[in-house]
Image 1 (tube, rainbow, N blue to C red):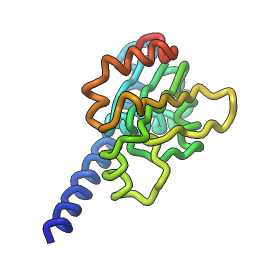
Image 2 (tube, rainbow, N blue to C red; image 1 turned 180 degrees about the horizontal axis):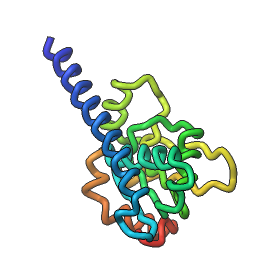
Image 3 (cartoon, rainbow, N blue to C red; image 1 turned 30 degrees about the vertical axis):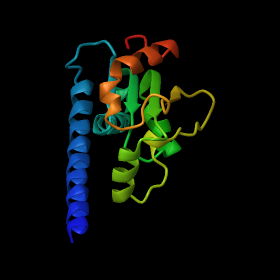
Image 4 (cartoon, helix red, strand yellow; image 1 turned 90 degrees about the horizontal axis):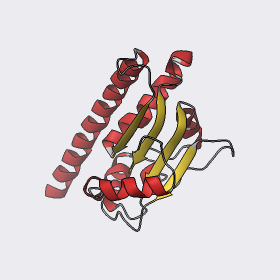
Amino acid sequence: RWLVAAAGWIDSTWSVAEIRADKAAKELAHALALRLHGHRPVTLVGFGMGARLIFKCLLYLSELGPRGHGLVETAVCMGTPLPASPKEWYRAQAMCGYRLVNVYSRSDWVLAFLYRSSSFSRYVAGLQAVEHLDTNTVLENVDVTALVTNHWEYRDKLHVLLQVFRRVGVGAGV
């Protein structure tokens, strides 16, 4: 009985976090479209639900048409709890002027357990590379399996990960 109750709690908490991230993504997209940040493109970096928020924000920006273009220079999504659907990632990358980076770790057991327990998708962006639909894409996959073995290490090793991104040329402002 305890395991069932714990699984229900995790699923409920996870679902609430997903809903809140998606709502915040819509608000961020509208704030960017209003250019509350000024007239320079932004760089967005997040892990876990923050990465989900960024990715969903890019999708919302794509729905705004021309108003959504040119607002984001680079987006770095680490350990993203979303499907690795090439079509959606292709749509999101169209909103990035320089790069959309999918940072993943094949050994992120926290993401594997939590996301897969609440979703039917076996293909998770935070656990694998996203396929490229064409060669002219700004989508980039960075495998950090050697550095990140636990989902919370994204936060703890952010300074190290930013150095890795500089070496591979991710984002002029990162």
